[in-house]
Amino acid sequence: MALVACPSCHKRISSKASECSNCHASLSDDNESHRRIRHIKKSNQLLNQSLFSMSLFIFGVALGFWGGEVATGARAYVAGACFVFGFIGYLICRIRIVLHKRKSV
Image (cartoon, rainbow, N blue to C red; front, top):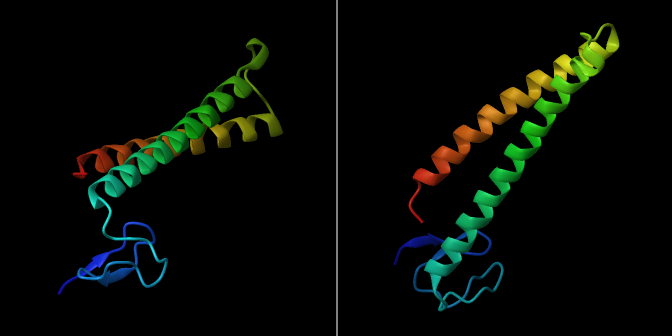
């Protein structure tokens, strides 16, 4: 008997159990399909975070150079913050996506 993660709630349960004692999910179903579904959901979540970060980055660039002039004052600080957080967030998301793709389903 080994402890495995429940495909639904990820709690540790017995490998011989027919259903999870926490969420009552049936374990007799195809666990491979549950793993694939979780993998796809995680991929979609990472892509959405990446899109948000890239949008924040583009917003910072557009705000900083709107109208053909470099922003000054508070607008420059907001544009710089959006630019930096968007760029760093995008890099982190891309690294997480690459690491996630390396995991076998």
